Image 1 (cartoon, helix red, strand yellow):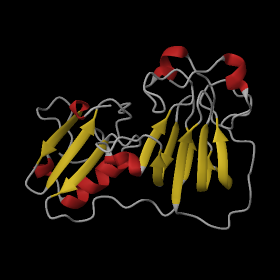
Image 2 (image 1 turned 90 degrees about the horizontal axis):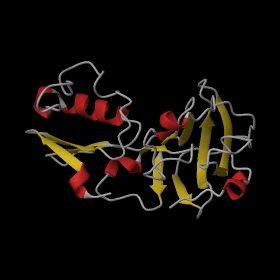
Image 3 (image 1 turned 90 degrees about the vertical axis):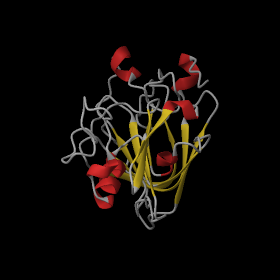
Image 4 (image 1 turned 45 degrees about the vertical axis):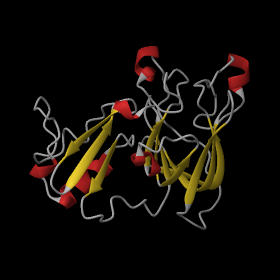
Length: 217
């Protein structure tokens, strides 16, 4: 991932950055009310047409971390949520929010410190990040979560995301896993989450990556 893949939109008070490689076009920005993002307009993003609070709000809606913002006055750009969550998308990726420490996350994409969409179909060409390959390959998992984990005793803090070679996502830190239905289903401090697409216990790893020959590179 290179800086060439990041486009900056500068205004008097704010500069919005967009990294196209990790954007999966969910549309939270383009559908937001106001004039900050207007599809078909050139430039597509106009920071001068929104207040600082509006810019901060819309940028933080981006579930992939592709959008980030820097303010000219040095004011706080984005504060990590008080709770780390892993949302299991219906037939899609893991949407992770929190105080994130993702192994290998590029410094030029600061949005990944709070927001990321992580591949769980196994077919992304930009692992560990989703690139919408799940749509091309017809990945199916409706996002139910059967396990409950442990009782919640703490929340917040750093959530580490480590990448097992040819294996699962290794999550360490306080977290809640949310089913696609919106139900907060699982709580705990450590989880191995499937990213090969073959586990029979999704979103958790059950070792199927070894049987299917999953390659993380």
